[in-house]
Image (cartoon, rainbow, N blue to C red):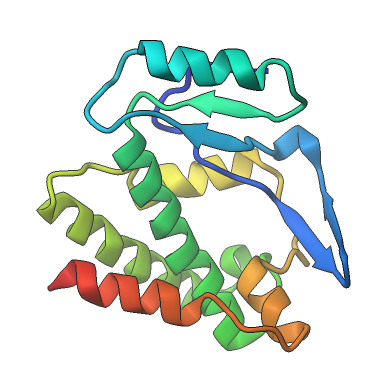
Length: 169
């Protein structure tokens, strides 16, 4: 069911796709995160969406700062998915490998700088790392971009990189 969230909560579905099936652990899935830009309080519109979602099994969170949450999710995808896809390693490499964690941090900080230039303050990399620890991500977990490469599907790399280039200009 729904909950108000602080800025630490992000849209997160830790899932693995195999053929036509999707496997995920609902205990660490935040589900849909939504809100209105510039509105930190629950509005009539966000309450109406919550009332609708309460009638479903969909997990959701009403964001207090949707732009920060969106940019935080973007920073997590850039800093998590892309290095993992390049090196072809599980999520444990971010804890056990100093180079991949350095690349990840630098990518996150780049997104953080662009967001800040747009007036949006996101979770710091240190806070993001603490959040990831609390989710107990499996060491061999493969994020969506690496799963796409494994399955020879089109990846999100051009979307992530292209958006970052456009936003940074």
